[in-house]
Length: 122
Image (tube, rainbow, N blue to C red):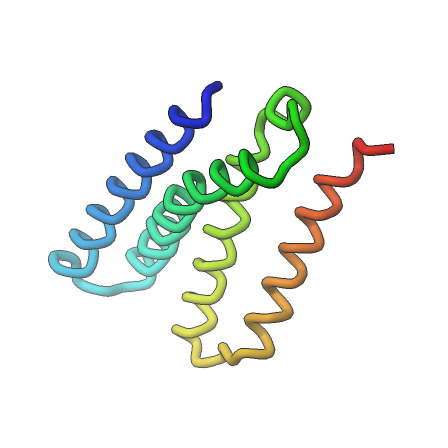
C-alpha cells in the first residue's frame, strides 16, 4: 500500500475516534462500561494520529524497500502508541501515573518495537 493511503486512513480513523471521544465526554454519563469504551476510543485516536507520523519517519529514515519487508509496520507502531496512551490514561484515572512509570512503559514498548524491527535483519 502507498504511504499516502496509510496517512489518509490514519487521519480518518483518528478523526472518527476523536468524534467518538467528544460524544462520549459530552453526552454519556460516566460508569465503568463507558470508561472502557473511552479508553478504547483513546487507543484508536492515538493510533490513528500516529500512523501518518510513522509513515513519514519510516519513509525518511528506514532502509529502502522497508514496506515490502514489513507491510504491517505502520499499523503495529500506531497500536503501540495507542496502547501507551490508553494505559497511561487508565493509570492517571487510578491516580497511579508518574513520570517514572510512563518512562518504563514507553521503554518497554520501544524495546518491543526494536525487537520486531531487528529480528529479520540477520
